[in-house]
Length: 269
Ligand code: NAI
Image 1 (cartoon, rainbow, N blue to C red):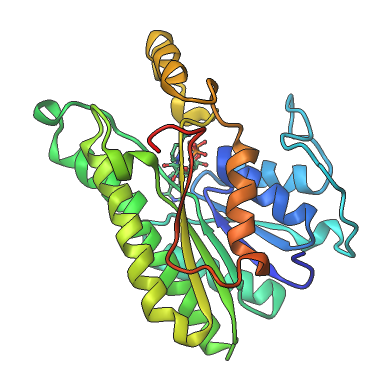
Image 2 (image 1 turned 90 degrees about the vertical axis):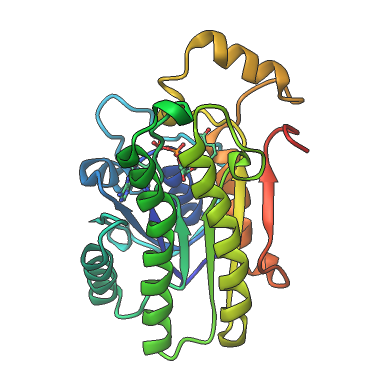
């Protein structure tokens, strides 16, 4: 499905970003796993190459259908990228272009953080740090991706941003995160309008509660409540989010742009 395509995934070192990398590689893309945690991104690439990272199971996604492709292990690379830093973003794109002699035409903006606190206890730094990674990071990476495509005279591209149900409905103790994710939705729609004429589609996914390190600090009692209010009565697996992200990156969604797709197990419908 992605044969001959180059895909760059931010936050590719962990969780949902790693699962996106795995599905893209399974389906034939050459993958750039970009993350501020470079060791984690390197582990992702080791997994894509069939070598388990120490102590981890090799497959964290169910491989429904193994699609044969001609990629060799060396077709996947990891890069250190801090999405909040324009120079870091641009140098990672340059490194990817140096390696593949073409820019990534598929980009998933998966890097994200939380810094929870109730509004009246939240300091300015916690508010701005979250906006910087989740919203400004999406802007910087999208801009660098599109600049590289235009420079290359590319005729098509697809970008998928990761928002959250929190961006639609708000969430207690996370006014910074909710605001950043609402921003990602509005950013997605505007980018979709502006970039359609150059053949670049931009969509976003709103995951519900997903089994990743991001939920590690949520107390067990709260976790149980979250599962109880979710109609499908469980958390999402990262791969269940990644399958929708990769659908939106693929030509199967060729008539979709500016869409914000909820993958929430029915929560918040
Ligand atoms: P995760 O914590 O497992 O992975 C996030 C990745 O982003 C990490 O590898 C981290 O190193 C990277 N990252 C953080 N700051 C960065 C920066 N400045 N530059 C580059 N990389 C950076 O989290 P998860 O759950 O996989 O999150 C992926 C996306 O999904 C995030 O945008 C998150 O907000 C979103 N999401 C997650 C949900 C969940 O329940 N896990 C629910 C809704 C949305």
